[in-house]
Each structure stands twice: as structure tokens, then as C-alpha cells.
Length: 264
Image 1 (cartoon, rainbow, N blue to C red):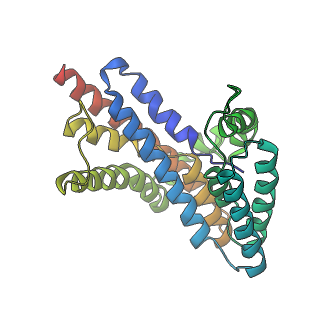
Image 2: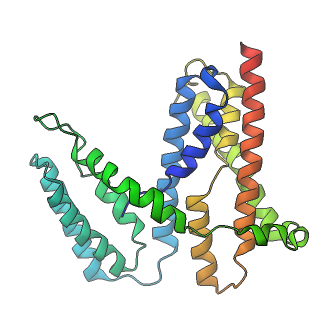
């Protein structure tokens, strides 16, 4: 019932870790914040565009569940069992409503308290995160569809040259870096934001390139799209995601390494 975009952030931060302490902390925070916002946007897209029919009754129950979670939060309730019960009702209602159930986990996370109890124990939200981490990391993520080695090596030339594969790879590689950097540049020029402390424009562009690393949500959306479209050839899009992610990681690392070395 949770948010599953953490591995994309982990890959991007892993690339940054190869550069050591030369990377400003502000750039790491910018990347983490942007990656989370990007995945939340993907979940909203799933909820809006991959919904066939809506159930008014189920949506009403989901709304009542959110209201109950809000009341629990504002009343200072820190009992994780209460939020888990409300979250289970919310997830079931969202699942039956026709909206994709991934939205339920994101909505529920807004209401689980992050504040630390007076007894010094972990906050309910952090405790739930730690409890769910083993099952998410070692079970759910391992079950995600991925290109098999046999597929990658068998008859790979015509598949890589396919329009769909190259289009997806180009979307991740070019679309992400131009879109992220363009929006950041526009926001900074308009005075709505500031360049991250200790960073230059070339550093920011390198971070934008790393944003092209996409696995969880990219694979999720592609599986939904091909499932509803009735396509029997879903491996090309997975190969395109893998290709775009590898290119983004390599280009972003090279660009940041050059920029940071020149700056030092």
C-alpha cells in the first residue's frame, strides 16, 4: 500500500556516491525531492488516465476513510494500528472505485503522524516504513517485470532498433534532462527558486540528466499501458527503459565528474 519509487532514487544517489564528497549536499536534496515529486506525479497520472469506470459508493467510502485519518491525526492519535485499519479500508475502497490503488498509499501517508511520541519511541510513520521495508525490498520489488538475459542477447539488434524501444529510451534520456533543467532554469530566472547552494548550472544539468534513470514507475506505467492495449510484445518497452536509464546514468555521471573536477 506504499510508494515504491525508492529504487530510482537509490540508483541516482548511487551514481552520485561515486563522485564522493565533491557533490554539494544541496544537489543531493534537490535530486531526492525531485524524484519523489516525479513519482507522485506518475501515481496521479495512473489514477487519472488508467481508470475505466468509477464507483461513486467506493469513492465516498474512500473519502470517509481520509476524513477519519485526518481526525485521528488532528486528535493526536499515535496508535499505528488505528491508521493501519483505516488505511486498509481506504485501499479496498480505492481498489473497488476503479482508480488505481497505488493512490491510496500516497494519500494515507499524508495523515500518519511523523512526530515523535513523548516516550521517545519512533514516530508511527517511520515505524511503519521500517516494518514494510523488508517485504517491499525483498519481495515486491523483486517481482517487478524486467528484461531477461535471454531476451537482451537473443535477436537484440532488431529489437533495439525498433521505434518503440528507441522512443522510450529517448524520452527518458532527452525528455527528462531537458524538461527538468528547463523548468528549473525558468523557475530560477523568474525568481521563484534559487540555484542550489554551492552548485553551478552545469552541475544542475548533470543532476537533470540523472533524473532519466527510471525503473519502478516507468515499468509500472508501461505494463498498465500494454496490458490495456492488448499488446503481446511488452519486452521492447522494458528494453527501452533499461537503455534510457543506462544512458542517463552514464551521461549524468560523466557531466558531473567533469564539472566538479573543473570547479575544484
